[in-house]
Amino acid sequence: MTRTVGLDTLVRVSRMYYELGETQESIAEAIGVTRPQVSKLLKQARDQGVVEIRIIDRTERPGTIAADLERRFGLRAAHLAPTIGGDDERTRRRVGRLAARVVTATVRDGLIVGIGDGSSVAAMADEIEPAATPVDATVVPLCGGFWGTTGGREPYRRIAEALGATAHGLLAPGLLDDAVTRAALCAHAGIREVIDLWARLDVAVFGIGGPAWSEALVGTEAWREIEAGDAVGEILIAPFDVEGTFVTSSLGERTIACDARDLHRVPTSIGIASGPGKAGPILGALRSGALNVLVTDVETAERVLEIADPGGGAERAARPRAGAAT
Image 1 (cartoon, rainbow, N blue to C red):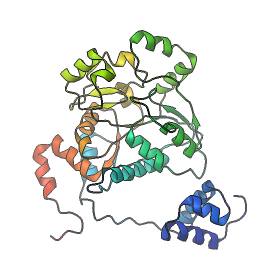
Image 2 (tube, helix red, strand yellow):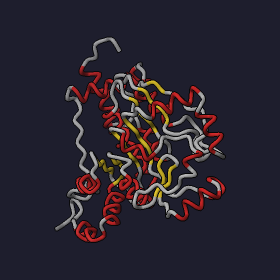
Image 3 (cartoon, rainbow, N blue to C red):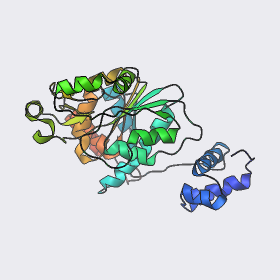
């Protein structure tokens, strides 16, 4: 949009979006611009003080849940979205929206960004807003074709498009039948290019999965290792136990994925997960050192702290909710 935008236009767009709840697409159609231009107008409205956003969330626990997580696990940051009781899907969307903001604030020109897969990452891709100014970054998937068949465009492509960044595809399956096939595929120049970029990542974004494997999926040998290792979760097709130890070597020999054991070397490593079944997997992932930034919801974060430190859980449970009578 090259013409000068008047205050009246900023006010109109802001009222339509924030007060009337209209989508950016409908606003774009109403005022005769594109959706990215609406996004720019909304940002301009915030920058000029036309819009002031305050979030007063009385569902969150007071106190220091995020600070407790950061201190307990040496995190750079823990970002917590409100938990919507009894609605895991809506909570996942809130976490996805928060993760999208974290990623948008993190990625800048010149960075190499790796994007994993899973429902939490997909939710983030659904919620990310187009960048007002394109970011000259490189975005790559962190693993090949995923555990199962998925529809739609991959999260890394959608995220790259929203940021205005350059996406590099990885035309390879994530899990192969044997190590020989993996070695042959990894020798391909196109696949090798992405694998080489994994060693230079500035930002990694990935979901923390719960137990999603079966003998039919991973094979007998890997299945036995997973069972013997008491795996509770997985990152990038790499199962781990609650102490954060990655438990299978045979599976890694058959996967085309960034090695989860190397994620601790990435300057900004963001793990995303939410929901009552993810506390154990998140705890194991935190103990593995694979992430230095966590995005989850309040109740899941509280549960992680409780199972990590059972003695401290009673004290946290006794804290009043915001807005509660004391």
